[in-house]
Image (cartoon, rainbow, N blue to C red):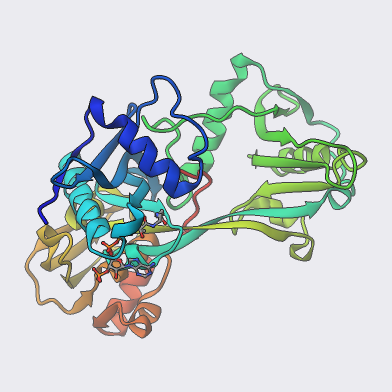
Length: 390
Ligand SMILES: CC(C)(COP(=O)(O)OP(=O)(O)OC[C@H]1O[C@@H](n2cnc3c(N)ncnc32)[C@H](O)[C@@H]1OP(=O)(O)O)[C@@H](O)C(=O)NCCC(=O)NCCS
């Protein structure tokens, strides 16, 4: 059968709602008046059968993510669905392959997604590199933390929001893969509370965004999306505030990265994962992705790479990775000393695995102890962390 792959048009919105809502289980709701699958920074690609039926779709979100102190243009993939009767027949591959081509055409150099199952994405070169985890903590544990006496907490006002955004950005910039929340597809969530921490000089040095769940019995809970302190005093005082809910919300559910400073005040044994949402990365255009991110400023060196990639054939072949002074480039050519599969390239770029691990997984071959060391150091950094589900 010949399928047409094309962006959705105005007349396709009901089809997109029907396929998406049935797949993801909100089909009891009618399509909201004026609903559109696309919005600024979001483009939906559809696969249509000869009768004009939408049989598969995927959304490309225009977003940026921080790597090595620079924002890397990314395609966030969402809303991937194939009609139930046609799964396993290549339509997912068709729509995602075309999505990667189009994303590259608009300047995306990597792609990330939250996977319900890794299989279909691994087949196409994405690899799991991290997970967004909410931890459940008994609130009484937080009630033992003493606030800093010089730090004042108050609800954020509209005028504080730029300072709150700047705090997130300062932390995201030093992370690996954290979302650029100024990107076009980013939608700021509403919260019951946004609390700012102000130091003795009147500067906002931390904030927490939180939602109060229903009830004040054993089921009462507080969900905290961000708790970011730029100083230990801010982190401590914000955590102590959460502890103040112990009598009416015995559980705090908080989103934390693996190396969050909050762990310095919390026993790991008191925190149980409440939900774990793995996410994956793919390199869409290797030379552009290498040029886009930041690299260690004190690292200078070269490694000859050979990339295999049938899904993104434009970057297949031999390249020399050249790193110097915090910048990197891939030059065509070289001896192809280290061979990387797409999943290996993804995990290495994200700093999610070192060359020795990639070799044992079958994602990297060739090379020497020296090339291993250079590649390891090049992408060593904080564990890949995303605080925003999409
Ligand atoms: C996930 C989904 C979109 C895949 O679409 P599809 O049309 O079935 O995928 P394809 O037939 O093109 O398969 C693509 C590749 O993934 C592999 N694959 C597909 N489903 C798989 C699974 N459940 N487990 C492991 N591998 C799988 C296929 O073997 C194929 O690899 P190959 O081409 O190398 O053989 C489809 O199964 C679906 O709609 N699932 C329900 C919704 C969902 O989970 N969406 C994903 C949200 S992140």
